[in-house]
Length: 51
Image (cartoon, rainbow, N blue to C red; front, side, top):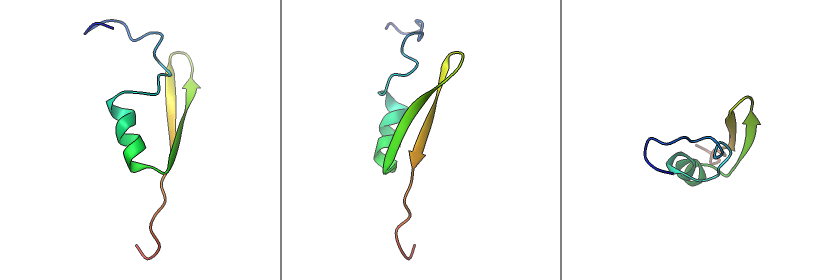
């Protein structure tokens, strides 16, 4: 994909800078479609005992 190009077709891609951060900060995450052309990222965060 060239800079400024269409992102259509990569809506549910599981890569990119944002999802790299989600992976680093969460215990588990997944993506589900959000019609008509988006996605919802769901994440699980676990707080340390005593924190």
